[in-house]
Image (tube, rainbow, N blue to C red; front, side, top):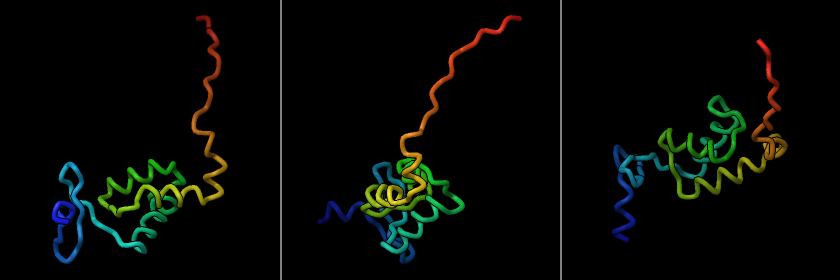
Amino acid sequence: MKMKSMKYCIIDDALFWKDNGGILLNYLLKDEADQVMQEFHVGDCGGHLYWKTIVDKILIASFYWPTLFADVKKHVISYHKCQIFEGKKKLLPLPLKPIST
């Protein structure tokens, strides 16, 4: 219990989680986490991106909750618009055509 509690700290009545690099991430509750996921997926910060990209953006913005990866993946997969473009991540290269000068 003591080893697990070393990852957490309270500053000004807010709970923070320390990652392996010692960076403090704001620990969110379930309803706060849902709002952050919605904002980073659909809102001004979003753009229906791949779930790993959204997780990276959330972590860079200093937010964390224990089921972050699973929740974001489930949230992104539930959108029909994101399912349509799931396999279309890269365009195939076109054949090269030499140009004479």
